[in-house]
Image 1 (cartoon, helix red, strand yellow):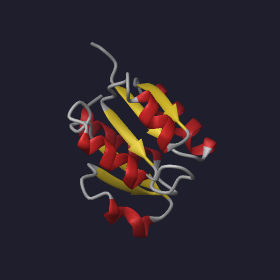
Image 2 (cartoon, rainbow, N blue to C red):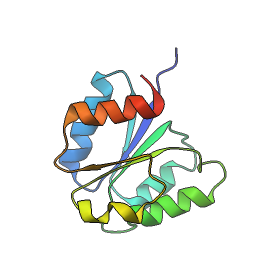
Image 3 (tube, rainbow, N blue to C red):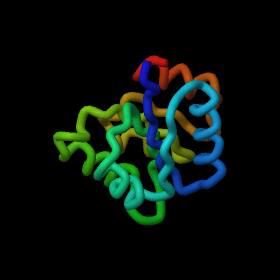
Length: 119
């Protein structure tokens, strides 16, 4: 069986590294991006099974990235899980598959990922 791929987009290197280790340890391929611009550049060639997305980032925000993904027919079906420290902003990505507030529980993150794309 082919491993599923997760693109993790977060400007905080500690969060990126933690999620990368968590997902890798649980059998997923992981690609990381430190910004919305970097994510969109990766998505020119990458078709992940799921994207974890922060809301507030210094260049392109999570909502901007989610709108760009929704407008691209090749990307629009990819589920997005919002993981942010700004829980009051979750509503601004209305088509997210799930919303998790930082600090998050690793088991909850894995539950949401497995529920969304399987193991």
